[in-house]
Amino acid sequence: MQIKQVGVVGAGTMGNGIAHVFARAGYAVTLYDVEQRFLDRALDVIAKNLARENAKSKITTEQRAAALKNVTPVLDRARLGECDFIVEAATEKIEIKSELFRDLDRIARPDVILASNTSSISITKLAALTKRPSQIIGMHFFNPVPVMKLVEIIRGLATTQATFDTVRDLAVALDKNPVQVNDAPGFVSNRVLMPLLNEAMYAVMEGVATPAAVDEVFKLGMAHPMGPLTLADFIGLDVCLDIMRVLQAGMGDPKYRPCPLLIRMVDAGWLGRKSGRGFYLY
Ligand SMILES: NC(=O)c1ccc[n+]([C@@H]2O[C@H](COP(=O)([O-])OP(=O)(O)OC[C@H]3O[C@@H](n4cnc5c(N)ncnc54)[C@H](O)[C@@H]3O)[C@@H](O)[C@H]2O)c1
Image (cartoon, protein in one colour):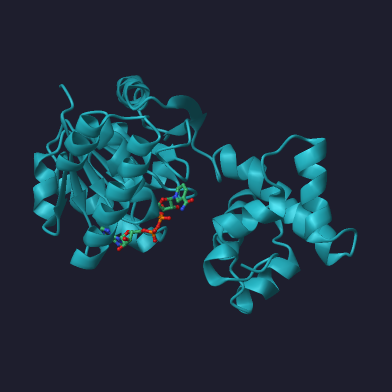
């Protein structure tokens, strides 16, 4: 089957970025969310980001207009029945994704692949909720989606080679670099990154160094573009804590214990950049 019409479920930070890159690559995109204001906001963000790419001569004015025309916002979930491929990027809650995967399985044609952009939920578990476990896969984009080259492609226990090949080819068509990963808590990206961020927080909590000093060590000594505490603030400290808890629960190893300072900061509502305060003030 040739994939022409792509469904994107959830029009938040990741959903609007995913819709952007598919539309830019010439796919017709059906963008679904639960409230009109989320769709309006997503279209606004997509239009602004396409305009920025146009201003930087990354795309032409014609490509910018064509990409925007390729996105159709919908509130009616049944419209996803028209799609040849669906990627889910809704809120990271198991109840929400479980309900969605059961229903998408009912709505989508039997030959359609259903992908999830989840950062931490088991692809194998989502697959088991459907009658098409061999066609369920993780397609994990990175924020900001139009800029970041990596797509982690996560194979659940039942995911077939044909499903993997199709999604890998799609990622390449989006001008991304796909990397194959098997289903395990945190996949590769968060399993390796989050303990680093968590350990940086322990260093601050124990008075080993200030946040700025820890970040300098990583920027200047390891050539990281930003230090771990700046990155944690950017990701959101609540998101970091949720992922540490997924790693802790999934591996059962004490090395994944969330840093107590992180827990206290999240309790205080210091969530990083988005709340105006995290390891730094914004
Ligand atoms: N933000 C990141 O840096 C990042 C990176 C990689 C992966 N992810 C993953 O991407 C997914 C989305 O994250 P986000 O940061 O875009 O979240 P977000 O909160 O910005 O957006 C989530 C969107 O999903 C919508 N939604 C909720 N329930 C829905 C439903 N039943 N049907 C359709 N839409 C629904 C919400 O209205 C919202 O617009 C999560 O699984 C997250 O783990 C996030």
